[in-house]
Length: 426
Length: 197
Image 1: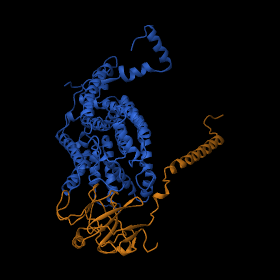
Image 2 (image 1 turned 90 degrees about the vertical axis):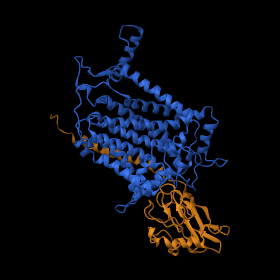
Image 3 (image 1 turned 135 degrees about the vertical axis):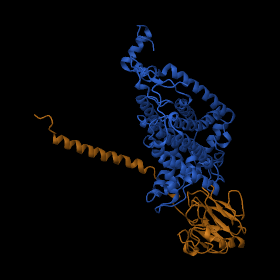
Image 4 (image 1 turned 180 degrees about the horizontal axis):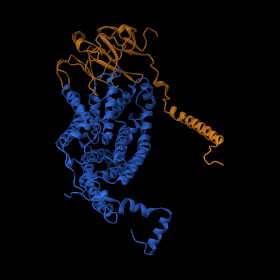
């Protein structure tokens, strides 16, 4: 920011500042926002999440100009929605690129979010005083799943049609109100034109607005408490005589440059995937969605997109009826719990230190196993059932919940070293 | 004049205003909520449907769209019917005690005529459509002692050739047998329990 030297530009800035506080906003969020010096690549993923979100919004706006949310059949017997995606892919100039960017972007967003969440777990970034940053973050994750769920139905393909049918029938299993609730949400006895219409507006406006609001709240809460770092040491506790953290550097230019590197590396990878492997072997663009929805046949192999697969696997692994309530409702609750239980991490973790760097073998082994089990849940969830895999899925589900729910005990038992008072530069 | 004294008249007015505007707000939400209800009445009707099964081969299955639901009609072979005898221990409801069929179908083969099975082909777990796996014996992802039946592709529920669900799968009910009558040797009326209904 230029100083107030009386030049034309600085007079213009002063004029604006008297009416809109842009200079103080810049100082508060960029030039005088102090960030720990020792951030490593795990801290790339927050800014990348924002970047992918922006890519999704931009590509989504242009897709919406050609897409038709109509499930009825056109004169050639293809649902209008499905045909409009075909048109985008084949006839709209560069439409294939916009569509592939949007579809690959969905996977990229989940990849980046999973890594972002893992970094927080690794360095204890959910702990006091960052509980709200963490909880709002988990809410963002949940609502991103909703956004992906609504968006996946829009091309009106087989896989998404049956995936959506299953979720509604899960809701219908809620005692007393379930059947009416599902009917009300679906707008018909089966997933159909009414359902597509509401998913369209939810995907385009309602959920993105909520997402935008939550993302702003997430960043605002982060600015209030400051960024954690790989050592898990508060930089705000050691200040120089100007009141500036000794181990901190201003976000701009030191970390905007670092983030720029992350953006460039990410875009290289992203563009490479979009141009050379946009389908990603059926994981980025589901093959099951390449045929139009057919209410009278279910395709032979229904599998969730990879980013839902671990939670889908948890749903599938609960097969017992308790308290006169059907197993599938318990499965649905288990799936919801699998998303919500990590949100209570700030109160489950009783270790005296934050970062995994200063924790003992118990944390390292159990956390390593959690990553392994979560990936395994994803792999099993994307495969068809078999008795062997069902057993594996149940063991993994058990471990997933046991890790979190027994954390108050094992996090206290584990060995630890007290971190140094100043940051360690590696 | 005391500064802490509450002006009761104004306070009452405030409460009344809050209650009234709250009621008005709730009333304004009502049309929004009911606007989401289904409007297409035809979704609800289960009109009786006449089906001709003269061309249905022995051992084959046909799918009919009955009010948007997939209706299966299967003409079972003697070997298929025999397979129903062996598996009762592995089944959850072998005697068809749950009300998943009309009373004239509470029998071993869950049908009026032993050979012709009429079921709604919707999985009783979460509503996917199971796939016919009629060939007995070991196959990919199927149990080794498979006698023929149906496999749901979504969550792996299995049913035998009378639509009875196997134990230890996610589905907990047999496939639904709708009311139906034989109008003649090969003509079926689905959705009615007596002739001419």
